[in-house]
Length: 116
Ligand code: FES
Image 1 (spheres, protein in one colour):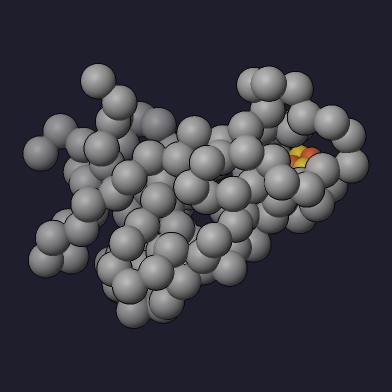
Image 2 (cartoon, helix red, strand yellow; image 1 turned 60 degrees about the vertical axis):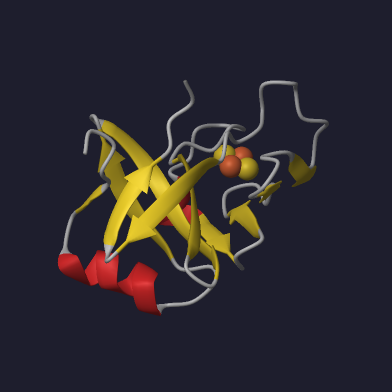
C-alpha cells in the first residue's frame, strides 16, 4: 500500500468520488504533493501540484474540465493524458509539461501508479 494517496480530509476524497470530471483535490504520496483530477467515470490522473511554467500551485489556481488542466496564473492549458502544454503565451520548453500518472481507485482507496 506504499503508493496510497492521502487526502487532507474525507470530504476531499468524497469529492473525487462524487464530483464528476474536473474535480481536483490535493493528495500526498511519500511526501510529494499531487493534484488528483477526476477525468471521467471513476478514472483519475495525478500530476505534480507545481505548474511547469512558473511553479504556481495548480490546486490553488488551476481549473480542470476533466480533459485539460488550466493554470490560472498565465493561462497555460495542459492535456491531462499527454501532459503537453496545448495553449501557452510562450513556446513551452521541452521540460515544461506535466507528467500525468494513472490513479487506481478501489473501494474509495486511491493509489498512484508510479513509474518503475
Ligand atoms: S505559472 Fe502556470 S501558467 Fe504561468
